Image (cartoon, rainbow, N blue to C red; front, top):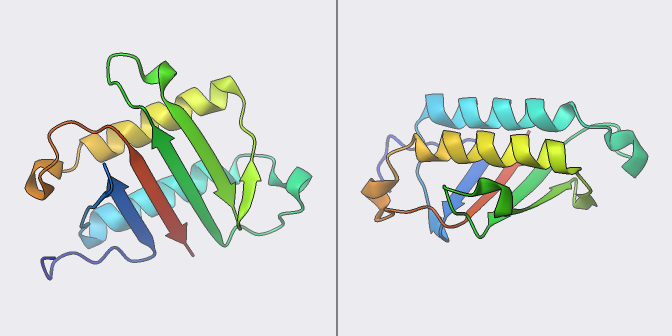
Length: 119
């Protein structure tokens, strides 16, 4: 992977291919995702502080993002999210990843996204 890629505290895979991120993209994605997650009510899951999160979006069809499946875990605990939040997260994350130059990594169409972030 290119030396300009830092992926500081974030691992991003699209279609199971690791995507390199520069410092700006790494920080932007990480901060945006932690912001979305911190807005959720994680206290119901006995989570006081978010240390790490995993987001997986499967069966992506950019024409029908509502059909994609999303799974979220925070500090290794699965978190249930309602349809409204699910829709916002899928669209936002897909949009951020699609804006990256994934073709550089051999990806023409994004079918799945797997993100792991840590503070």
